[in-house]
Structure formats: C-alpha cells, structure tokens
Length: 107
View 1 (spheres, rainbow, N blue to C red):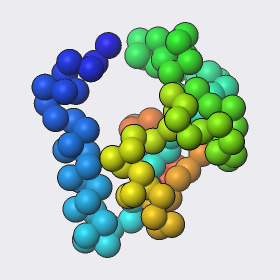
View 2: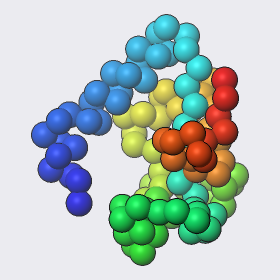
View 3: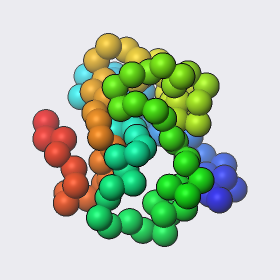
View 4: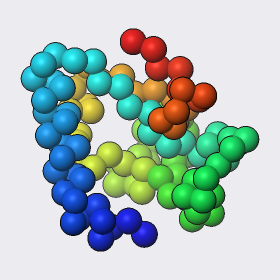
C-alpha cells in the first residue's frame, strides 16, 4: 500500500540514520511493536489500522514471547535489528500510536 512512497522517500534508510544517530548520541530509544489481538481492542482506529487488522499485518501470537517472531510479518527489519537488539533499546508492549492519548512511554 505504501511501498512506492516508502521507497521513493528512502524511509527505511532514513529511519536507520535516525537510529544510528540516536545510539551515537547515547539517547534512549523506545519502540512499541504491534501486537494482536490487543491492538484489535483499540476504541479508535483510522483506515490504515482497520486495514492492518483485517490482513493481520504485523500479527504475532504473544506480546512478550518471541517464539515464531523471527521471519514473521511482525519481525523487525534486518537493517534495524542491530539497533533494537542491542540490550539497551526499550521494547514496550502493548503497541502505542504516536499521539499522547495512548502513549505512556514517558522517559
């Protein structure tokens, strides 16, 4: 759905640059990967979230277990794994969207 735009704008590469810069500056990095079925319980969802729920995009079986995570549709991009799996990045659950109405990551 967004592949052409992501490629044209270099989103993967730019996100990697941000992660690299944050780690170099010793900033705390926190991510909140999607987890279903809890994401299906959101009271508000935009069209993209509805589509992602319908096709089980980023679906994984458990919020904490990584059984079956490697290579799944929910797995982290290989380019980001060195930054995420470094023992310092905060991986929170459940998934949080960008707005303050649902994000409890306070650093």
